[in-house]
Image 1 (cartoon, one colour):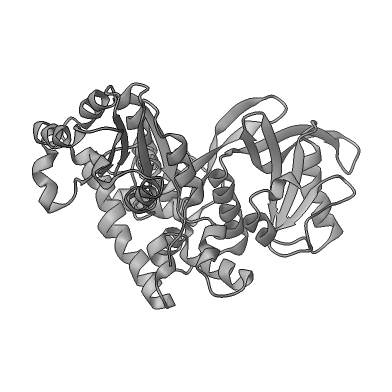
Image 2: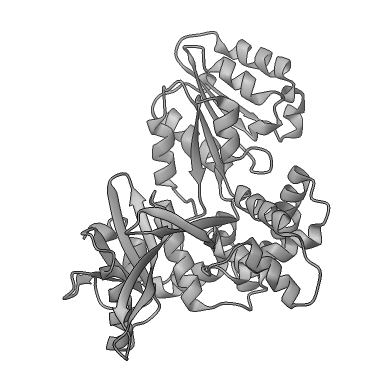
Length: 417
C-alpha cells in the first residue's frame, strides 16, 4: 500500500523553480524521506526530467559518509551540473552535511539548481529553518497520516477505521503493520530508541527521568489546561522531588521541537488577545501517546478532541482555545462573572471558525451548553459542533453546523458546507 500524501506533494510541486530551499520537517517516521525520494522524484520523472538531472544524496547512508564534508559534497554536485536544464538536488537528512546552511544558501544562488531537503528533527527544527537560512528556506511541515489518508489503505468501514486510527495513530509504518501486537510493539520500541534519544542527545539532558516524568504528564493530560507551575505542583503533591518550573518549561519546549506535542494557547475571543499561562497540549500522533500510556488511558472524549485538533492543523489552521468572559444572572438573581470555553478557535488567513468537540449530546441541556459557548463569541464567523456519531451534516435552528467526526474527517471541505 502506498500513501499518496497529495497535500504535501502539491506543496513541493508549487515550490519548484523558487530561489528557496524546500525543507521537509516533521515527526520522525512520518514519511519525510519517502515524500521526497519516492513521490516527488517520481513526479519529476513523469514530468520529463531526465534521470541525470536529479541528484539524490542520502547523508545518513554509510556509502555517502564522505559527502558530509562540504568540499566533497560540492565537488560531487559540480560534476553533475554540466548539461542543460535545471538540476534538482534531493538531500536527505541534510543536517548531517557540515555547514549545511551555508552550503545550501550558496547552491540556491545558481540559476540551474533547485534544492529540496529533509531534516531530522533531532538537529534541524522549524526555528532552525528560519535562523539558518535567513529567509531563503521554505518549511514544509509533514504530519502523520490524516484519517482520510489512513483510510486509503484500510480494509474496513470508517467506524472500525476510526477505532484503529485513534488507538494506533497515523505513522505510515504502523498503519501497514498487521495485528495489534505488532503495532503496539513497534510504537513502544521507537519511543525510547528514537524520540527520547533524539531529545536527550540534542539538548544534552542530564536527568532523563525528569524528562520522562514531564512527558508522561503531557501524555496523560491531552486536551487539559496546564502549565509548568501546575506540573511542578503535581510532583509535589505526589511527595517527590521533581524538576523545577524553568526546567519543566525547557522540557516542554524540547517535546514540541521534536514534533511530539503542539500547544494551543488560550485566546480571549472578545478581547482579541492571548491570556493567562494555561495552555492545552495535543499529541501529534495518538499512537505514540497511547503507547507511552501502555494503551491503558484511552478516554474517548479527549481522544476525539485530539483527533479533531490534528485534522484542523493538517488543514492549515492555527488553533487556539477560545475564552469568552461574560456576565449572567445567578439562581438568586445576582449578576455573576462566568467564562465560557470554545474548544477550538481556528484561523487561516481571513477565514475563522469556532468548533466544539462533544463526544455525545444525550440531552437538550448538553446541546444547549455546547451551543451557548459558541453563541457567546458575539460575531458572525461559522460555528460547528463535532460529535463522535450523529446524523448527516446539517445546520440546526441556531445556525450551527452539526457534524459527526467521520464526515468531518473524510471530507476536506466539511467545514465549508
